[in-house]
Image 1: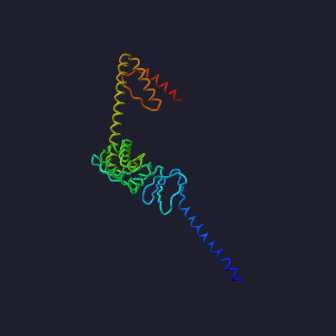
Image 2 (image 1 turned 60 degrees about the vertical axis):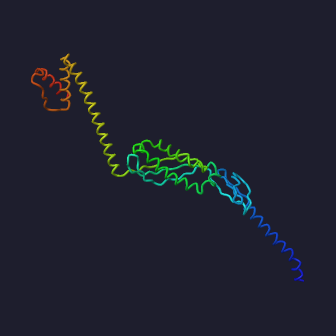
Length: 269
């Protein structure tokens, strides 16, 4: 009886296993066929090695084992250009590094026109950095960075356009000078500051001399004003509590000095 029951259930079990295997195959097939890419991504599809084009964003289907795809990020990407040793136009050796901002605007070209667009753009940026900055002087490198950044961007954007890449910006990060040159530039800056300070002092003395000359002419025309100025000077000196006042012998009468001394003593009390 048991044998007969098992014999009757055998076809049912075999069918169940068969359908279960088919279900697994269908699930695997669908999981391989259904693809989803984000808004900022595109999928470049190849069918048996031939280009079909770019798909996305969203949901799409491919034929498993027949189609192959490669995802490309369309967002702005960045990479650091390693420090490059550069000899400037005026024969100064410096080290310069930079940052490159770029994005893929044509994913098909980025896949079909170059093997590795990230590595290729990086190496091209290093070469372009040495070429462009090698044509500039040290002063331009330190003071005209915006102009040099624009030249670097243009020089990079032209060849990468064939790869479907747009270079949006190139920024020079740092310029490392030799220590000997740094000391020389520091001495030059110090000498320049000293020159400016001497010029300012000389201009101040010149203006003071002009004013004193004008004052002397006024005192010459008005001797009374000169006498009043003399008394004012003596008063200012006495206010500092000095014990001795020295003046010329013919400067004023004894009565005048006596009255001044008496007034000063009263002031101090």
